[in-house]
Image 1 (cartoon, protein in one colour):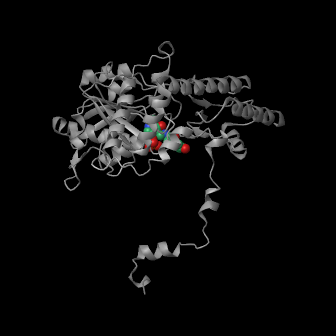
Image 2 (image 1 turned 180 degrees about the vertical axis):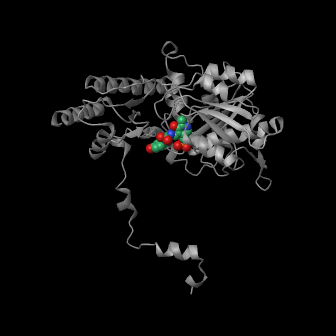
Image 3 (image 1 turned 90 degrees about the vertical axis):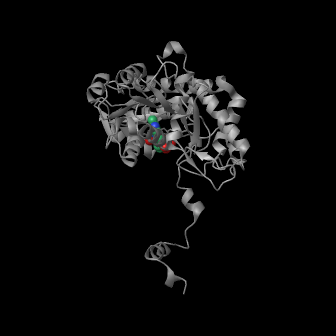
Length: 399
Ligand code: 0PR
């Protein structure tokens, strides 16, 4: 009787219900970060303390400030912490959202709306190095922006000359990356900013991954200048807390230089107590990751985060040195904790074969631009990397 009223979609999904399906059994197929063998992911095992805090705050909803004013205050605290890493001025603002994709989409939404009248273009253009994350492509598609992607230099950084050449009357913004998904490289941000100033363009920087790495590096080792003070055209920065921030997913962050900028994407919810104004795509937003991050910062501080970063970098250095000793090639010297490796012609395996064998042994890697990519996250220890090297030695000697 009930089925009579079901739509076709309902009937189809009903047909797919398999009563013998067992949730636990299926989850047992998943990999776990805990063994340290996941080298293909920018997420990692959450810090145990952050996880505990997260678990006890799962009901907190940033989408309802009247019910959760304390959580809103914690979100502001997180924005202040993140902001302090990038010299965010006191006139700035930010939000914690689901991750880098949503942050980039929201940033480009604000850029599009802020530039709507001045350029009066049918399809405004944004220019980005080819190295940008796929979320930029998705955002451009959703927002009806024309995304012009420019091939990078051999060092996998934005090609400044080619970017300048691509600017037209329709261009509204440039995008730079601090910590590319592929190899962790950072674009020449100051130079990108100079171009933006010359052509009066907005600059958005995707530091979803690198945002919680570069600020902790000793200044002598990096020409890092991801700072609102240094970059006059910089309007927004994406920085995720669920990548190097070691809090459970989902946790993204977006900072704006000027709190008036996101007014262009602001909607009011008149029926909710306090008539909150939202500058996020989602209404309901977890507060748990923000609370976990603020608590972790309270516990460990700048120094604790720096120690995590430096130990990842030391492990990456160890891995790269050991791989090179075995004849593997690393064409781009790693700047952070991502390695792109190739095999020489006399190596017993090519990149694809090595990738496959490593997966068979439970070590997960990815292939990006023809290179075997290793992301060395905090949940992988040096001892575990020694085991990987031991395995590679065995593979080489077995041929
Ligand atoms: N910007 C950059 C530079 C990124 O690297 C990523 C994600 C994003 C934006 C988007 O962030 P969200 O995934 O939080 O929306 N980069 C990872 C990647 O594509 C995402 C990922 C993470 C994939 C963990 C797999 C995985 O296991 O590789």
